[in-house]
Length: 135
Image 1 (cartoon, rainbow, N blue to C red):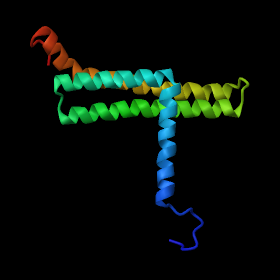
Image 2 (cartoon, rainbow, N blue to C red; image 1 turned 90 degrees about the horizontal axis):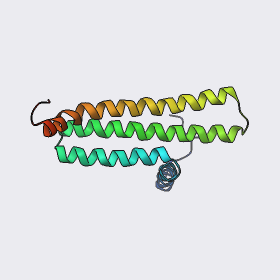
Image 3 (cartoon, helix red, strand yellow; image 1 turned 180 degrees about the vertical axis):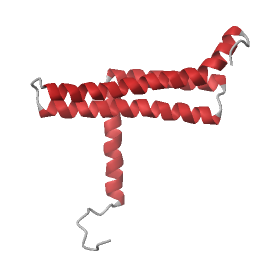
Image 4 (cartoon, rainbow, N blue to C red; image 1 turned 90 degrees about the vertical axis):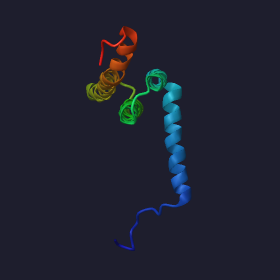
């Protein structure tokens, strides 16, 4: 490594500032984006259901990763839309593609989460509802 590097020195203060900015982005997303709020409510409901059904630690990990995947996709979509709106207020077909692809990523992640949730929570839930016919 070159000791004459021009890379900024990482200090505890700069690291704290990085976290502050990250939390500000998370807060902005949940404060301003209706879909992020919906995802958060669903995540809490899924967590409560997983607790009630006593899913395994591995299943908890899978549910947590899937939930994080959806929230991260929503945040990237929010950032993409903000950047594109900043770039121009006029319609541009390329910007429409960028926004549509970002929104599509959120949809894919949400569909994936529904499938994962159904695979993990469905059998024990059906077992409770129908008394031993599922799973």
